[in-house]
Image (cartoon, rainbow, N blue to C red; front, side):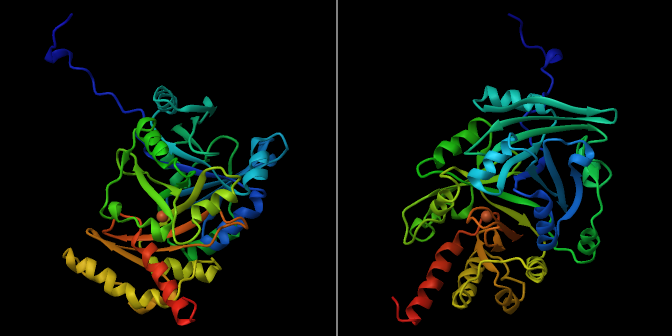
Length: 398
Ligand code: FE2
């Protein structure tokens, strides 16, 4: 046995599961060409790149949509043997893959599998003379996978962010006319703030443990943890975060409440299979983003005017109690735009949820702006419920 020596101190090893970024979020969709136009025109994404028959992709068509640091990859199968064909039959359009950029995809995959992950795809190198993209995937809840992506040379993420590089070999850059429109009329979406999964009743803690053990995430602590009112929200939720807090993944399960759980409704329209419920996209200017998205035709959840009869007292009291300034955005404009507000000990947030993005009541987006608050707007569950109840009362139906 050797004795410890200052000269042979172990070298610092890089954590293989250190997540650098959300590399992309892949949707399986029935018609990627048309879906690309929907997300480009309604949400302001640029249609940046494509891989299809014309670029040598024989089995699937992929459209890379970009806005800020958000990369959505829309994939449609080109034949009935592609796995996406069966999944679209079962689930409709939705999220298949939340992919993470890492230093070394093979090392990340091996570590995750050693931690208990079920493999979805062994490490694979996609290369040409300009660089290499290595991908390897593990299964998470339901139909969703996490792909680890590492990039070298031309295909480095920084080059892609600048618009200088192809996403990977077989992709080609395109310039849709909508991109110029988006540049002149930005929607202001900057990055993925959080990604929420719906799992079956009684399975939330299983997946909390899974993210702790497999991806080495931690429970994300915040003010309103103890404040979840399942009576109003009909859901239970815990938030898991990567070590650097860069990636936040709340996990919901249905719960008994005053009305049918929205989580249960999701599962029923998703072949009773867990999946991604919503992507929250961050903006610095909630009012400008929501105004722009409304003008583009985005369908947002509407809430009764009664919500605004109570919101300022609730939110501004919480802020004052914790020594923060009141909400600085114009209160009347917030109401006109139908934006939701919530506060905690660290500050406040502005948020608004879209209606489902496809005919099934499954995936939707949230547009969120943070002013200090790091939580997820749980105060709005009770406030929304009470606002609706007040309207019911006024109609004499309570
Ligand atoms: Fe959210």
